[in-house]
Image 1 (spheres, rainbow, N blue to C red):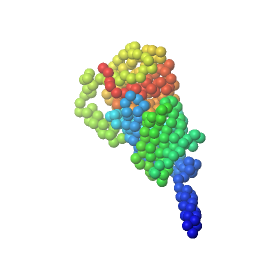
Image 2 (cartoon, helix red, strand yellow; image 1 turned 60 degrees about the horizontal axis):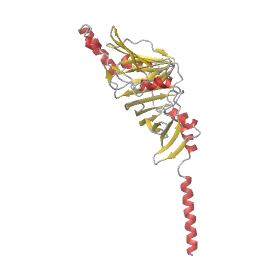
Image 3 (cartoon, helix red, strand yellow; image 1 turned 90 degrees about the horizontal axis):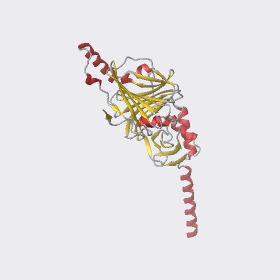
Image 4 (cartoon, one colour; image 1 turned 30 degrees about the horizontal axis):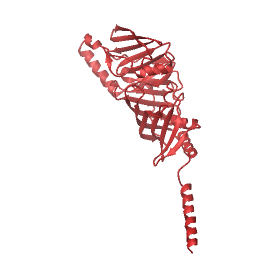
Length: 351
């Protein structure tokens, strides 16, 4: 009788294990299928995230608002906690791909296939595409998340070859992305605080006109108009000061010449670096916000420098930060070296 009871217990235990296995964790293939289905069926999404970057000499923190409307409309607004001149916006609509700096009335129009030309750690469909495209992707589960480790595809940065992507088990939306260096150290982290699927958008949400205007910018312009109407333009030389920031990484080059040029409403500083690979860094500020002009055409790529969004071409990279326009140009630096030098133009200013 004891042997019979023992046999029944083994049978019941076996059935229990089988039922649990049948109702247990999904396989990697199951999760990938759910992710693809989510992306295919959604009409768009709105999400918010915090991004921390350690790709330069100093840690950089961004708040990101991400909007996507099918088929091909995107709005990614990045606000840096160290840039007092407002956010930058990556915008894609029927007219093309743009990087906007509303506070400076500055815009670039790109001849690019963004966001399909590389990994984008804050875009849902880009993350899913990276998972699907990597046959060697690893997979694990925790209590609340499905975690994939995949290869990345950054055109201008080979120092970030891997990423860990965390998807919520219930919604299959991203909660955390860690972009890793060759030693698996996280240099970029994107933490999603909210994710709304299939939201409603206004007709002009992705228009350049709407995104180039903002409440803060409008208030600043109004104050400027009031000051212009009540007093003549200032000629105080102290207002025409440009605090020059030197790169901490120079690819072995040293400063050969530093030249200052007074502009009608600001100052330009041109620094020439001489070495095995020569380059020139131009910094320019203006005391008044220029009138809105047509976007500057760029044949190149959008690149996140850690402290700003840059426009990268084969021999030049341009960006704006804290009210200053920067241009780094070289016939000898590679695209990756251009990005490295530009990323290091931050921190302490020099007189």
